[in-house]
Length: 248
Image (cartoon, rainbow, N blue to C red):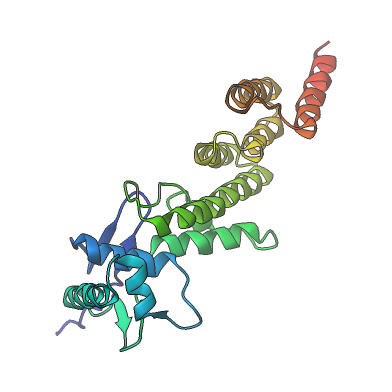
């Protein structure tokens, strides 16, 4: 009996935690110029259909336009040699091939679902895998600075939303993990600390909530000479007072 031909798996592009490319379940090494092209196409949203070749070359290569265009042609040729399913290029435009599975796209999709509070929480959306990890650490591309900030905001909002939704389901340990991940993204962000404090309060751990609030208060003052908001302060102190009266 003959076996059915094996369908090739989608190319997997990883940008979180460092650049990685997997083709047919095997890691592939690309040159830095080819990496830059794939990363830019995955991160920077193009006009309605695709990036103009001239504009892409200008963003990725300094120097004369003719030389930049030649560098882009070479990079695209090498990418097609690696796999035809990485880029789609015409005479005037370039875009990432629709077959590519990019972790940053999965991150954005998961964040969108988590922030849509009317949707049921899917099992795969409780994973933290693509909601943390530095975007292309060690890269100093100028165009990457804005994308790091943008994706960082997407991820931290998603982590806070995940912590809240898990907390509402009584899944406190998972909620704590998500909240700590949010704090790791931005240690000075009050809403991230508030998400963790809310989990501690929901599970009845008022003392732990108070300790977390005090740690945040010390950190915020040391780094920014600021105090937590009045709302968060009232929330923690009010719960602590209720707990103290109940104990007395």
